[in-house]
Length: 313
Image 1 (cartoon, rainbow, N blue to C red):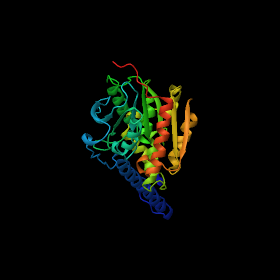
Image 2: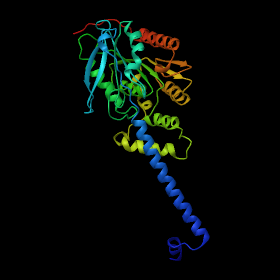
Image 3: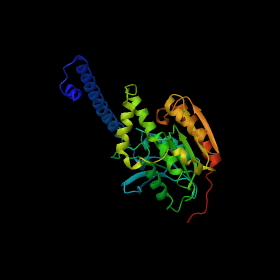
Image 4: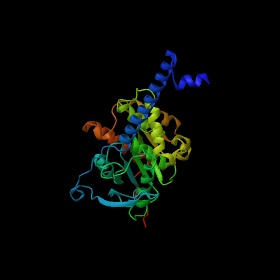
């Protein structure tokens, strides 16, 4: 009883010190959670850059298509670039804080080799509102694009390739594990769980070194994505990709994602390939680096999923 009274009305110096430390710890935790919550909000609401490009004047005869996202998440608009009639289609999945407009040179390189190519913006990117889930719901967007394109009578409905960078790579891998129509994958800077990309975002904002900041951010992100709380890492289902060729690209200038990509490559089933490049983020590469990168990606698809026309409906 005397101890409780002392805690309620501290009179001794050590009790006052203990109470001061407890109050300081409480407010430190409160401040950390508040900062982490704001930081997570900034991460899932990236700065959007709309692709102001006139499709009417763009080479490659693009067609604007709209598709429904499974799960009632609304509609998305994409650009379809036709290749050889009945050839497979490659869907390009842009990275975090990027947009479809930044992938047009990669699209052209693939279309020049007679592939059908499709590009679109994820939620919270480009002209789309909403928030990013760093891959959870973005996989549904990829599935919606595949579902739409598979209904066309000028493409092979059973042969799709996916290219993705960080956010897009995770979404592509997650979709491929559940869709037998995906026959080839290029995964650039892929990660196993969205919280790994969240950690990268926290560190890029300069707050990764603060005590418990990453944990607090993960807690806030988990609350926002509570519906996916039981989703396993994508590496747990990689055996479903046995027989699906995959190229894993590691960028040395992004050590965190280079390591996650290396780990994913080691867990991947055959056939698998690995490429290590000095600089990542296709959109920021110089012209020579882009050509080298495009040649590597195109060569992979040409060998693993040739653009041979199949019977169409």
